[in-house]
Length: 551
Image (cartoon, rainbow, N blue to C red; front, side, top):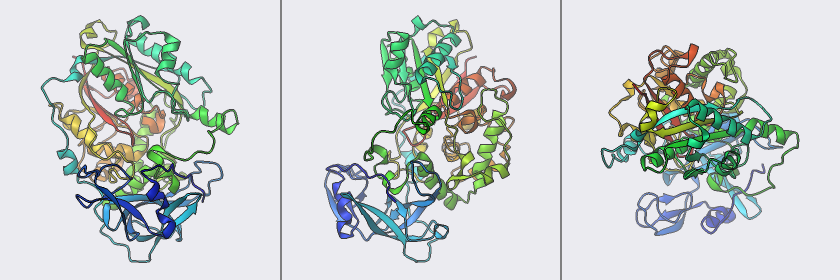
C-alpha cells in the first residue's frame, strides 16, 4: 500500500536506506549503550554525542495495535493493521509500523514479529510480520515508570507565582457548528469582540495578543494567525505571541499570564479558531485542493509511512496498550462519551445533543480500533476567545474574576510521538504533576474537571495523571458514569466536551470552566463550583490550569 514517504535528511538517511541489505539498523550510544530512535545528534538518555550505527536482529514484540478503518486520504484501502513494535535489543525503542502477512483478526498485543522492508523510490520502509511464536503475556518494559516521571518534575524556584498576577476577565465565542461555510477570520473576530465585551472592556483596552498555533498550519486549523487578527481589528498590541511550540493550545493563555506578570501589558486577548468541517467540504467539492504530493516531515516522519495519518491512530495504539495492561474495555471509554452527550443535551450551543446509549456507542462504525465514531471529537467551525487581565483590574470587571491558582507546563516525557509514554496520552503525566507543585490545593479540592477529550483516551489519561484516580484505576472510577456526572464527585466536561460540543481545540473547555465558576451555566451548573481544573493538548506538549472563583 502506497503510504506517504518520509523526508530523508543527513541524519535519517542511514535508517531509511538500511533495508537495502535486509537489515534493520539504529543509532547506538557508545557511552551508555542505549539504542537511539528517531535518529538524533545526542543520546536522549545520557546526552552523549558519541553515536554510531548498529544492526539489530529485526525482531520485536507488538506492544500497541490498532486496525485502521478510516480512509484518511483518497484511494486508501482499508482496513489495515498498524502496530507499535518494541525492539528486542532495547524494548524502550519502538517502531510504528504496518503489520503484514497475517489475517487482521489473528493479530494481538504480545506477538513476536520480524522485520522485512518495502522498497519505494529511495526508501526502504520497515514492516513486520508475526513469527508464529506463542504471544508473551508479559510485555517488555516500554515506558519510564510513573514514579520516574513524577520524580523528574521540578519544584518551584521561588514562592512567587506568576499565575497570581492575572485573572480571566472575559470569554466569548463565535457561532459554532458543522460546515458554517464562513471565513475563519470572521469567526475569530466575532469571538474576540464577544470576549472583550464580556469583560466590560473596549478594544482599545487590549494591549496584548496571543494565539495558537498561528499562521501557516493549513487543514482548517487556523484563521490565518495573529497578524491576520491584528490587521482586521488594529489593536496595536505592545506584546504578542503565536506559534505551535507552546504548552498545547492553552499555551497562549499561559504566555499571556507571564507577559502580564512581567509588566508588559494589562489585557491580553487570546483566541483559537478552527474550521475543519468547512475545509473538508471545500476539499470534497473541489473548491480547495490539497498541496501537491510531498514527503512527510515533522512529527509524522516515522508514523505516516506506516499508514498512521492521524492522532486517532497514534492514540489508539496507546489505548490498546492501556487496555492490555490494565484490563480496560471499550465500555470504559464509552462512559466518557455517554457522559459528554448527556451534558451536551443541557447545552444549547452543543453540536450533538441527541441521547446516546452504550449500545449506540458500541455499535457505531469503527475508526481506528479500539476507537469508534463516538470516541472521536466533532470536527467543527468556530472560534473562542479569552481575555486575560492584570489582577489589579479585577474590581472593575463586569463579572466575578476567575483567578489562576496554578499552571503545569513542564515537559517530562519524550516529545517524539511514538517514543513517548504509551500507557497514557503523551505529555500528561509531567504537566499534571508540575501543576500540583505550584499550589497547596489537592485533587479532592476540585469541584469540576474540563479535560481535553480529542479522543476518549485523552480524557482517561488526564483523569489518572491529575490524580483523580490511581494509575490503572480509571476503569473502576468510570464504571457506570456516576462519579463523573454533573451530580457526581467529579463532574466532567460539563458542556459536552469536544466529543459532543465540538472540537474547539481545548478553548471550549476553558470557556466552560469560566462559565461554571461564574455560576452562569444554567441547567448544567455544578452546584457551588469554586475550583476547576482544565487540561490542554493532545500529543503536543500540554498543560493544565487550576482555576478558582474570586471571592
